[in-house]
Length: 391
Image (cartoon, rainbow, N blue to C red):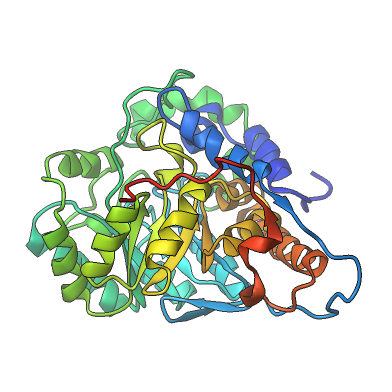
């Protein structure tokens, strides 16, 4: 493509669809069952409006904030996503892009690159874990992340992993052996630019999870790790407190959608919570995260940091979330489209789009800083909010 730059996240997604083999692209599409939640995550932002000023605007705007003790040049964090086999550099490319733009990076324990590689590329790396395996295994992974330089821990507990999608689930192989490569070869040949990236690096898509490897052992495949998760009893609130105490540093609980759960998270001693429905990949019919955000902020926002994850596609979405009380937002699909479209530069492109959109919205709203945003800056329709679990 003569011009690799793109002007919106939507264009990044269109380019990703053209570049990726169909099975790889479909694996990036969020949603479960009927797709109600993934659609609402995006549509809900469109229901919110702005109340802009016309004069007395600020020539310079301060976009900086901090999350989990880490500075961010603007209020966006990289959300952890698993097995980024859309590009041979995967999470390392994302980490470099985030570092180049002054942003922290969340690395999934189901990632295709190791915590050592990613933390070396971005010293502001938060390591994400699921409640998978024994307590001894959890501690081993945690201490490995700490030794590699991780500056925070994200615990995700909301993954229910629906087994059905009305539009069909992606075809994801267990591993890339010779039989699998022959089976998927026609797809790769129809996407020569994607294939050439791997050929140039003399590599194949890595479907293993190196951060879940036992000491001295081989990393499990994604489905092998998923099988272990299926066999692990769900975490209790005592488990949350225990792992937070074991970590003993900034700690985020990801997947909170209810006020009562947010209050329990405070009691467990977390530093932050992420209002998240797993990008719509969880229990379908769960409301958009931006709908649940205000009630959670009202309940616990003065005690812990609250970030939002889900549906963010433009800088104005970031500003809407901040106006409703979020400290920052996390993005997942948005940067994956950028990674697929143009590697590290594509991720940087997405981050630049979001930063520009945040700055533009602040200008129109007459704010000199992201810290000045309030609910009065957005137009909120009646019955927009969802106060789940509020008593």
